[in-house]
Length: 185
Image: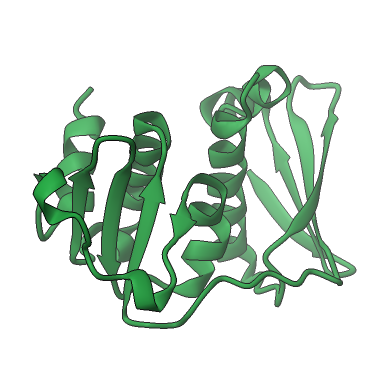
């Protein structure tokens, strides 16, 4: 993988092997878009580390172009007029997921990130949704990952209401425990 900055845009070039490895080949065929989003977010994160790419926006226009050797070029173009309200900046963030698949995909992604892997986190199951509480989560991670899969509860609703109807799935280090289990499969 090569990553370069060109006029404020991040250009990532992948070989055929890397295209398959990072599931970029599936981006075009992913019916619900969740796998494509995670693949592109992982690619963006890895490329940003290589180039010190630090855009001041959280939304991108993404362009993919095949190259003759079987790989592809991916351009991440920051949207200049992006206005996202990510909620409050409180230390403890609480998110609701309405599918187990979305919850597990986010946990898998966060587990791959050394900084997120050890964050204090708890996952609950309610009758119609899952709730994850995370301490110390950066706004950047929220904007790039969780925004696509979960609803963030406002600060005044961060209390765990309805505790009699919930079941604790993993307490204290949920991202690490569930992520480690997913990594073994």
